[in-house]
Length: 221
Image (cartoon, rainbow, N blue to C red; front, top):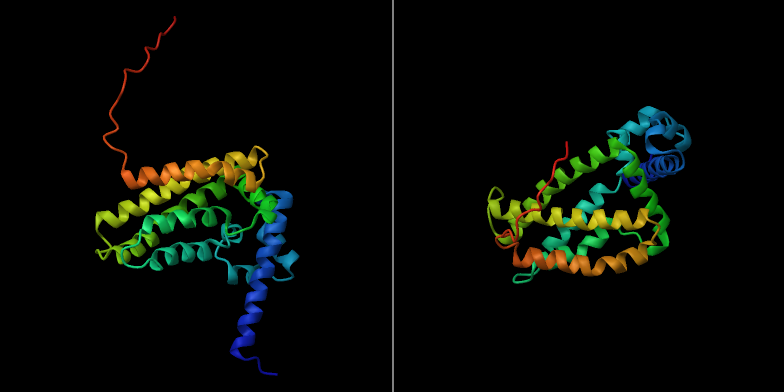
């Protein structure tokens, strides 16, 4: 029986999902650093070579949803109508980005995800690389939305500021989740911070004028 293009794509999608599911199950159970790609392949019922046919590196097994989240971020900018605030659209998108779109019913999975990153230097390095890649993509989307050249400082600065803001919010979310809060409770407590962060983005930091001399440091022999 000859398999048509539609069936082949479905089979590939199922294989990719099986590999990703097997990987996350092993990562959460044993820790990311303790799991090998070969073990992921065995659990998914495929060879190591097949795993690498779908994923370029072990880290990509963990950050499997990066492309989807990146596309959602870009689309939130492109959906804005003329005259609408791109910043407001990104603020509406930030929680989705930080939770990979998961509902509160998947709170445990979000907690395990953040715990795994904290426990692995490899994942922390890859997370930083992903942010640099997202910055390039978001700069292009913002330049398009603002009608400027992609190389202009405005779009690049706006992308960097949004990602920095997202980073501040993400760090607070991670601290709350690892401290034992549920995802719903953590997000409720983050609402004022999110509003403050984006209000600061809209109004600017101002001159950051120094208000007082730092306290003297007494060095004892």
